Length: 264
Image: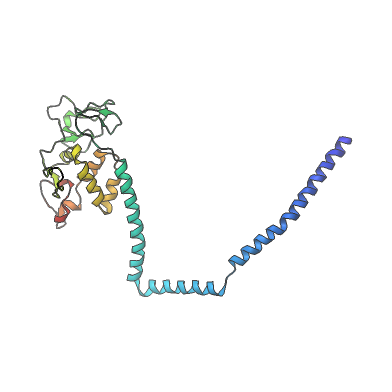
């Protein structure tokens, strides 16, 4: 019985303490509620300002649609431009580039390969769609029949060549310190374009393309993780390859990784 009385006394004390705390906190809650009401209560000045802004917006939308379109265009275009600039900056830092021949280069499959392209992982990505030829992510191009199960051009293939520009119109490298040529660099077929574009000395030209490209074409190349993916995206035909909407600027060399946009 004594234990029961002690437990009952403890429960009564706890309940009394809770009532005291609730009574003490009630004024503070009431003060907070009163302050919120004062802040949120409508005032004549605030109501007039809101009404004027709403009427102005409605007037512009109904009677000046071109102005409204211009205003919304400014907002959306500025936001989109800022977003694309941010993506472009990230892409410049993250793209993996082919290094000079003779050094180790990091392959698209994550392995290391030397000047001859012997990939430690024996896996390659390639351009897939070519009916006659295929380019792999080491810069080699070969006949489709010479592609191994790994996706790489076979080392023993007689048709294999690396950084192949023989089917391309490529601007000569400028002398040291000179400005780079602005001419287009285009190839007869997609596979040659990708292989030629993957030359290690193309890095600066490709960075300029990344900096100057605009619109939907930029979105297509910003997802590239390495030089192979970047070249694959650039070498696909686009509106820059077309003249008068339905005719290629060059009927043969229509796959370009660098465009002379002054002539577009």
